[in-house]
Image (cartoon, rainbow, N blue to C red; front, side, top):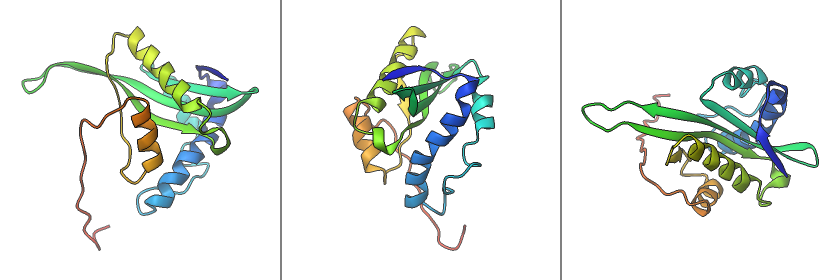
Length: 160
């Protein structure tokens, strides 16, 4: 397996790999998430993200075929009257195609993000995971992530 920083030439592959995770979300929460399509995470958006110097997209390949990606971003927040300054490496997406899951691809992508965070002097990685996504929650816990904040909602029917 090979993991490297994505280039503009990888945009189509990354867009296609997003379908696996988009499908999980759309199946579980169809009133929030659109089913995967060419418009849900288009290659043009991937190219825009790659132009941001604080964005990192890593692509994992096995036998020269893309099998997963991680999209992360360095976030730096200034001190305010309420909180101290903080830096995070925030993971927006991680997706591994179904056939390559449970083969260390996701773990290798996370470890690559850890190395980048460390290279930038950042001590914390963060991400969001939906409560219904038990497989992802278990994976992240196995990588050492713990819950530090929870978001709750009160969904009012008829108020879509």
